[in-house]
Length: 67
Image 1 (cartoon, rainbow, N blue to C red):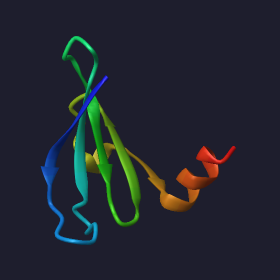
Image 2 (image 1 turned 30 degrees about the vertical axis):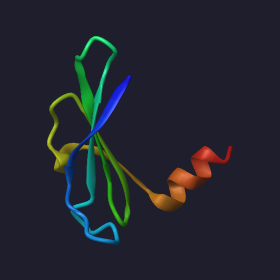
Image 3 (image 1 turned 45 degrees about the vertical axis):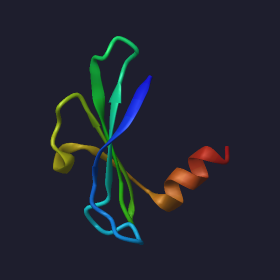
Image 4 (image 1 turned 90 degrees about the vertical axis):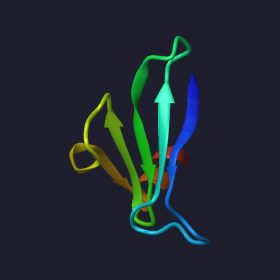
């Protein structure tokens, strides 16, 4: 996988716009974008807009990862 920061809209703390990561497969095909925000994570498969992405709160993300 190739993961790069697509936009970096933060100063010190992560704000509501968050940080956008572009995720590509090893051949360079876009898999989607992942947004890290102060309220959680948003996964946008393919070229979906952030508003149409799948959201997970930090509490739910942490619970999932600790299983």
